[in-house]
Image (cartoon, rainbow, N blue to C red; front, side):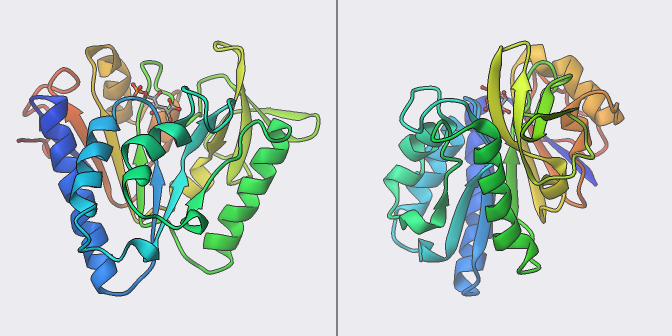
Length: 254
Ligand code: 6PG
């Protein structure tokens, strides 16, 4: 079921999302279970990550059971200002005492793009598929063109050395190297094959320029990647410039 939660500002959206996440994390920690979170990159989640870090840093949560993955990565080193990993470490993970073995880096730029993707594909396989587990939480954003993670419309996926395939919701791998012609750069991205297995999917979307793409997602239009992401539990945290209140049966204003 698609649920839309509409907020008057990115600040209130971020607070609400951080509270939602910390509630889930707290429950998992008290149950003594491991908890696997796939994080989004971009700018929209920064306030939420800041809020979540301040909630989790009070020591109540045994964070050793939480594993942190990245939904995608830019083709830059992990210490580069454009790196999603660098952003997440700066605003969230670096403020908490997270064991390094619980943070799963794409290690972008350490080898060829398809080899980085191949290695992350193995991580996903070993952590989830081999153990018959699914990601507990998946955070995603969406670009103006309807991309999500680094699944861009008309981008090309390099599956094995030399084999290209146009990005689609049916890619046969969990992690892929993606060439984005519009940006003239490589990206690394998880694919719907693992993203759609998440127990709970949360989109964070803000910015008037994304309004048209979001309407397509709500209509299930298949020509944009964000619409390929569908799961039993999917909540869209959006601001009012994306979705006017009351337009969706599930929208609630905060
Ligand atoms: C990235 C993200 C990407 C992002 C959207 C929205 O690497 O940038 O993973 O999918 O979520 O591009 O980005 P903003 O939040 O900056 O608008």
